[in-house]
Length: 126
Image 1 (cartoon, one colour):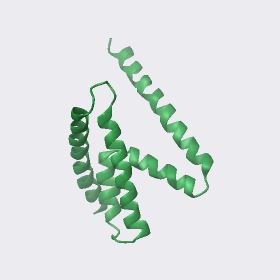
Image 2 (image 1 turned 90 degrees about the vertical axis):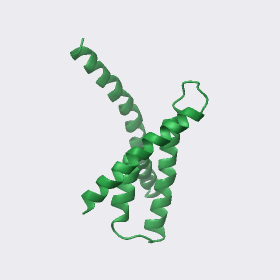
Image 3 (image 1 turned 180 degrees about the vertical axis):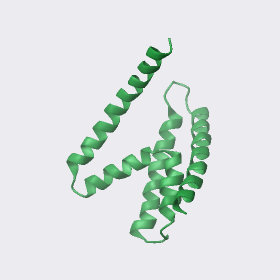
Image 4 (image 1 turned 90 degrees about the horizontal axis):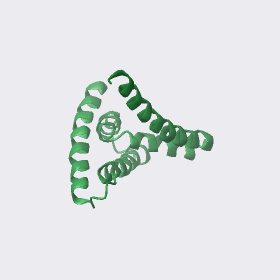
């Protein structure tokens, strides 16, 4: 059941990301900055914060809410919200080293992975 909920939420989240990113990019200044992605990532983080506040702090939803809305909808919308939540959770738990390592590793190695992936394509498909 949870896998189905994650899939349904992910389907909706991906469509929502596509729509919101395009909308934000169209109405933003056309200066080359990825406004659509920024809007999606920040909106996803805000939504994750609200969702976790309702689920964990207020205990308003049952056990299927997080798989559907957190993992599915927001995971399909942006995994940046999951990254941000895990980092904040580490900070709140006093695990500053893990939080900082997660930030640095995700950003630095994410950039390196993009460059490496493009290099692989350029090497294999000349």
